[in-house]
Length: 380
Ligand SMILES: [Mg+2]
Image 1 (cartoon, rainbow, N blue to C red):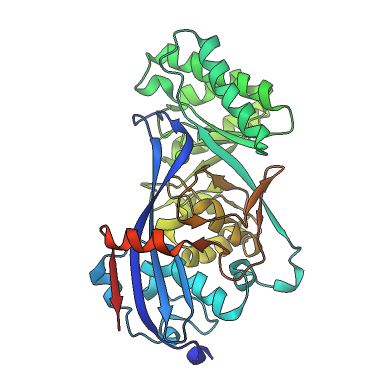
Image 2 (cartoon, rainbow, N blue to C red):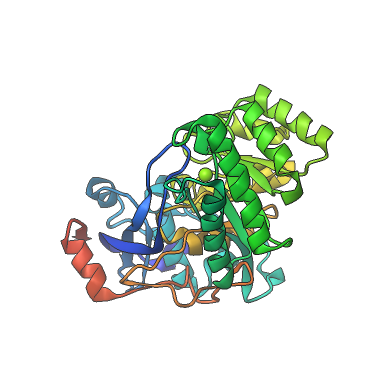
């Protein structure tokens, strides 16, 4: 069926640079994440004059393998990208949407008939890093992070994730634990009772620290604890038992970065309730397969996304296919050359345009400058 799509006759790659509205500070294990965001883009064009683009890190050698390929050779029987096309998965989904005149979420959905438009997918503000480390008092530190949360609330965010684990590296252990707790309480007070609040320790807690922080913030009704410590089924089982005994409804979330090979097994067993494989390194197509599996087990999906800008927009297209899709991770950025004006955040949701593909635009002159400055262009 896909033969009518033609073949790939041009591939261009270049990196755009975006900026966050404020610099992101430390997390539990790393120093400042800064203000600049790298956005490595790849554009596929067909001999019928249609093109699609998206995040891709494909080297010129890898990209060359796709040049001249009929699209049909990269798609399965349902016209979805094959694993062999993983390196160009996002540009290919965008291209397929443009060829078929449909948003990616409609192509990904099991049944496009039930989709309510415009599609609204819950998101959380992921920008609450440890920008408070220079401040001596917990009160001042907590007030600073709470002021960021409140500003992001004014920008229509309703759900927030806070970096914790200050005592793992950047502060003395006890002082760091106290600061984490003060920050969580201040953010809850700043954003009100209806917000979902998550905390992310980037593996900087121990089991007993996790228990203490969750016990002392019980009144804050946290939604999930992310990467409390390196994945360990014994410790997660104990944390789960303890949460149940305490009557705390806090989900255990994990899976970004160096995710344990057994993580899916632990999700099936209920030890981990929210899976967070990175949207780009896992790929859209693989997330569809993973999401179907998580749905079958009653687990949740919340793809990790940070520092690539486009994750704010593309992740939510999975929500029509994955029943347990819980949140888009939203890292506010603006990138000259990238037109994302069709998207908006409204009352804590990403509102997704009905435009074909991912509904994003590229400014030609800026992209061509990026292709020349360290990118590549391949033509058949
Ligand atoms: Mg994380």
